[in-house]
Length: 198
Image (cartoon, rainbow, N blue to C red; front, side, top):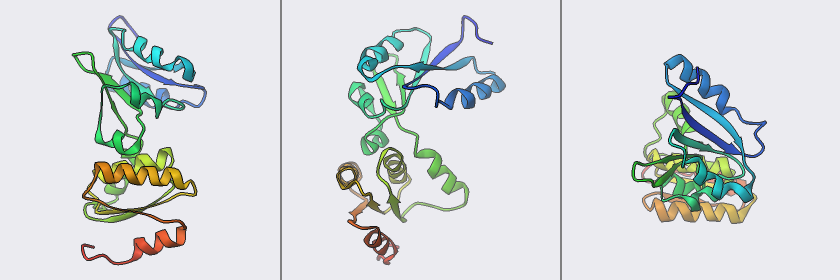
């Protein structure tokens, strides 16, 4: 039940009819006895910077989930971001620290990585192939990098986006071998070629 102690998690994006988070989080919060609620908030791009600031001016705002079309633009509005955000180039969760600074994280790819690990596959030191380097692919690549992979091959028909992700990986994860390929055949050939550390 919502009461005077309920904390709000703003789910900000546009349009809101596709939002699934309230249906996932709110039943969980109720079952776990957490006095918080995810509230869909429709906000167009031109209003987003001022709206984000207004949301965090509320004393009972616990955080914000950020979805399309704001996942990329929100990064420039934050005071601090995680390495995952720096690699993905996007953010889907924001919280405010006690000193007022806004911090962003990205967990769109974390579920994929946890799913792989729950199947018993250790990603540490492995080489991976990511096909598609848009929003989801970039988030998955960022989470894979955080899981300790040794090398990653990227492919996308959008070569500019693919090269941009590759550069972010190189800048933020210099220990990882990063490869882009102009064709999927070359990407899969690279991925399947044995490496000394494999």
